[in-house]
Image 1 (cartoon, rainbow, N blue to C red):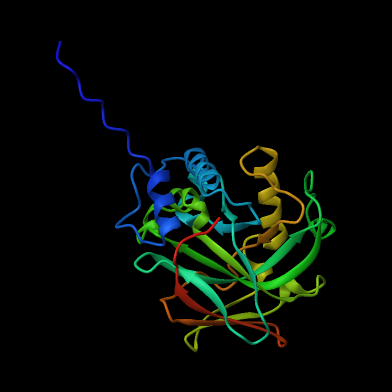
Image 2 (cartoon, rainbow, N blue to C red; image 1 turned 90 degrees about the horizontal axis):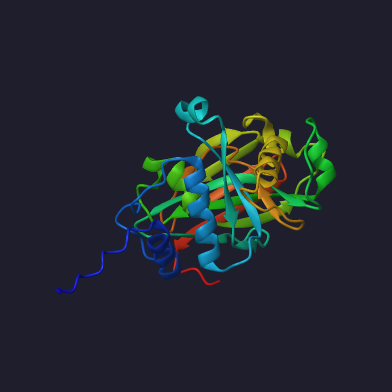
Length: 265
């Protein structure tokens, strides 16, 4: 009886994304099959987190494209944070992005969880669960150059395209959300904003994560950071590019984009 060759393995986006993130090499395109639902995308995300083998230090929150909000019944997406670095005064931090992939910088407020809420009741209830707030940058980068063409599913699947947080100075809990924030890329102003004006603000981002946690989609833990949403927008940056952000009149942070060389768990 003739022998049959084994059927080729079905394509798996986790394997391709894992290899790219560990090596620091970009992919030609987002690997097939691209998840087609939020549930599929978060399932790929959880598999990729497990494969990368690093502790989850926090969660980033991003926005779903406006045209899909009603269809999907959600306004935000979440992704794990696996890298965190402290900014050192006026010395620019290092923001690692994939050469040939997608890379961007986002000025955000970072919330440090004292404990995990059972649920939030609205208003400033989130403040009782947070013991520190910082200005900072989210480094958003994916090895897939076309990841935004597959939003929100590709973004969620590729760990929220988070490639680290850069933590700057502390912010006062009484006015952090209303501070005027301005971001510059290579000396050009690319966006002003206030955290409170992004959907229902930073506490809304925390409430979104709490809901995902309660439904078993993600696992919040005390001590994790929450990157609460891009205040001035998502700003593409190339290797060697410089980003600065001002939070109010006294807090200033800066970073320079460098080439990703591979994730080290």
